[in-house]
Image 1: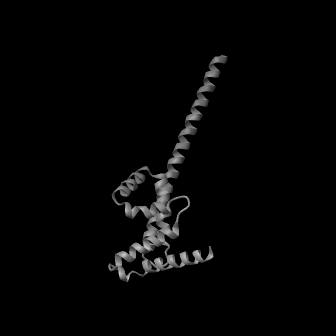
Image 2: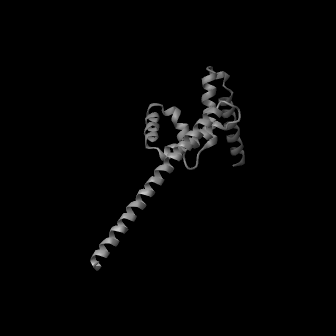
Image 3: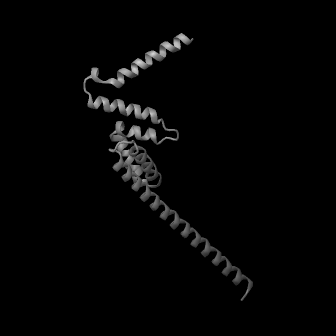
Length: 147
């Protein structure tokens, strides 16, 4: 066996190992992606079950599960974007909660106002809106006195 033949044999072995390592890495990444999507789906289902119950645990679970699924699934991302274009008022609060620094209290307040508007059709019956305006006036008066 000559020196060139052994060098060529070594190069083939190195290439074969590199291909095998790449194949294993890709397979592991694909398996992790499927596991993450499955876990995210499980969290979404748990959130959907817990949403109607008292205790406000369901919505955060839904958002966390949705974040996991959207991060690892291209098809889910496409579907979410389609939903966002069709129903922007429904999807916008979820998008606000999915930001890096979510405005949780603002989203909760906005959803409470929307629910109140949906349930109580007459404006004079809506207590949250009146309370917000009263508090806003009170704070403005206090700030004016302090200045």
